[in-house]
Length: 97
View 1 (tube, rainbow, N blue to C red):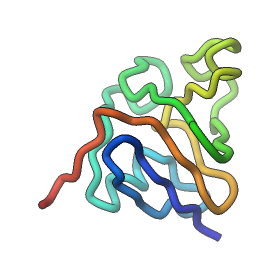
View 2: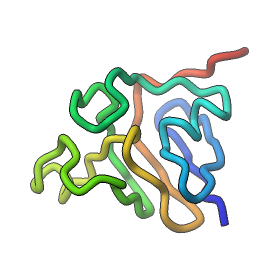
View 3: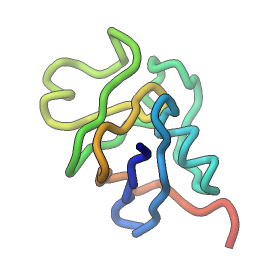
View 4: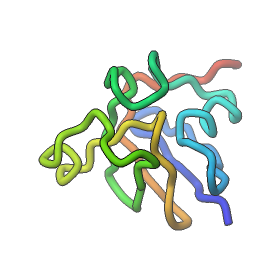
């Protein structure tokens, strides 16, 4: 079952299929999130989960334990869990108007 991901403050949203990173699912939907390394180390895509559950797909992503406890994630190596997720991603923008 896919998850609906809502981005704040832009109001953009996209569907994220199981097994697809949030970064790639956003790109599939025509939404650009900042990114660089795409392997969880550079922190360019760092954003915060406001609501819902997200799980990193690698054991040691480039966020500290404290940051994870505050909801910070790296969408390049994270997947949505559950039906609805809200992410604070102020630099997200649509690729096409």
